[in-house]
Amino acid sequence: MAAHYFHHHAARLITTLTLCILGASTAWADEASVKKAAQAFFGPDYRIESVRKLPIGLYELRNGDDIAYTDEKVSFVMFGDLIETQTRVNLTQQRLAQINAVNLKDLPLNLALKQVRGNGKRMLITFEDPNCSYCKRLARDMQGMTDLTLYTFILPVLGPSSQKRAEALWCATDRNKAWQDWMINNVAPDESKSCDTSALRQIASVASKYRIQGTPALIFANGERINGAVPVGQLEKMLNAISK
Image 1: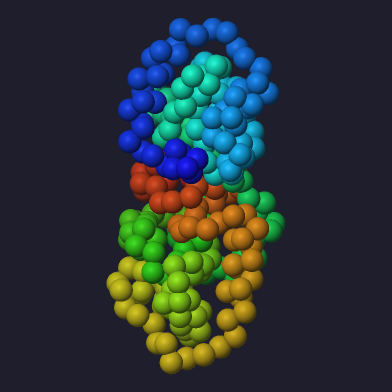
Image 2: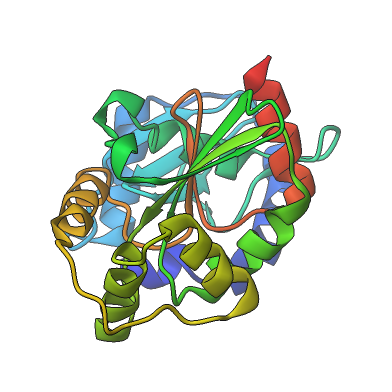
């Protein structure tokens, strides 16, 4: 039941309305007492890992990749993205990127497909399923990006057909070309070839360590991670900010 609360996007309207109510609140509660009250609300089947006081009259409740917000009395629980209106920064997405930060030294980049565009000074690492429609859209949208080194880990998470397609791509004579042909032009790789695909298991093991269960997952040069595709304009801004 608790997971339903965190994914009920219709409650975003409640978030907006409640923020107005909480704007007048000045008293701060103890984080431990907020955690206790929030845990009582969600029940024993959902464990709140941490509570963090925010400088806007709200508390952040976190369980893994799930984030919600509440007031100091846990009178309201709010769902959806928290956005700073002046800068239009998605604070929830920004926080998740920090929570899901990856140690780049743990990533076997020698097993990733590698593209260097322009001077390659900016870096982006992705985990992608070959049958993921969002991954394909991202690949098409990113075609015009330059001055980028792109590492792509093939991570089949969408079932047996994805695994078969991933193995065919891995066994291709030119993996990079086969990947681009499939993701952008929908030209399927030759599935008659076979080879050692143990590298895909190594990639899956790293993904499991960092709880990467969906694709695309985007990792930046500072280790921050975003789960899911983002608009290219936003991606450009993030890459530029991090490269500086």
